[in-house]
Image (cartoon, rainbow, N blue to C red; front, top):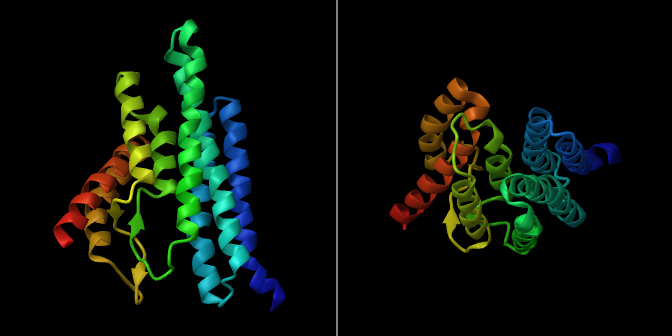
Length: 221
């Protein structure tokens, strides 16, 4: 029984390990492996909570571990990616400005800290979830079109603001064993995109979630 109760925390720690592996892949400029490890982290981040609730093994330390591991996978990883991204297109004199990319890491830390003190009864998200933000950033190298780096940087900055904002976005969680209405709306758009274009559509899928999510919450209010 004790082993089963520790299973959710093991999955959470594996999320942290996935983040470390994603960082190593970034050091090697291997964006395919980076994406793979981040996706594994997203899966583990979703699955550990389900396992904890299924075995009635939710604990305070589990909640803290979840956010600490998320800082690695969905905070440090996208921050370092943006640092490399800015370093590549900024002129030599402006390269020190690439350090500003780690603002996204700090924003992720703030977002996760706020999440930890949010009542568990709140079903929807306050601000863009860090996994969604990380997926947008890690999906940038797979965008099939040449986009001005300044435009990409501006979009990342706007998503960073959305992440720490108090704007409500719909959750994909199941309520009473049933998916929310937004789940079906988003699935109709996202699933065909990802099935057809796969990683090339990853960043666009996150933008679609952010746009339709805000629109959905506005209409529902």
